[in-house]
Length: 168
Image (cartoon, rainbow, N blue to C red; front, side, top):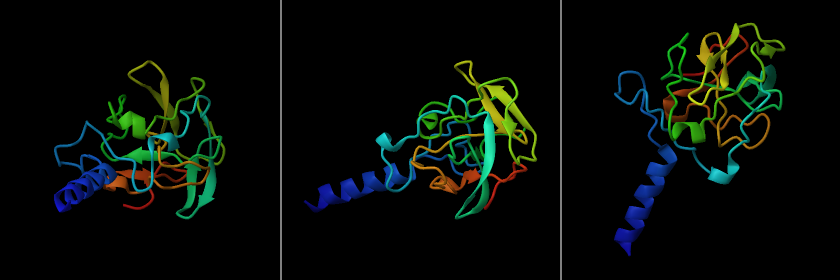
């Protein structure tokens, strides 16, 4: 019984921490496979934004952060390279961190001071970038203003109006 409990506890810890690839130089860059974080289930995933080119700002427990038109918090990924034309979040990472998809060629942002742009995803959609950083949603955020993805694996961060990470 103790062995079963210990194995189950170990599995739970691994599931909650995920395989974030750590910080720069850890050898995990590129896989981007991260966990959901505490208290999150697959059913809690936000719907992938299809008209999120309209970004704005919202006040959260972390201060004023960039959000989509529907109020979902935007995140950047340390394993991405600023100004890149491809995302480092691939494979299973995309299930936990879906890209914010632009509805047109030129995303717009109310109150956004950083440069908005797009990069092409592997499936041919256009992912929104801010100040050269690809933007993502977090599957663990279920309501507007949630910031549950902040500092997951010390590589995921909310961003301010200029596209700079908050924290970390």
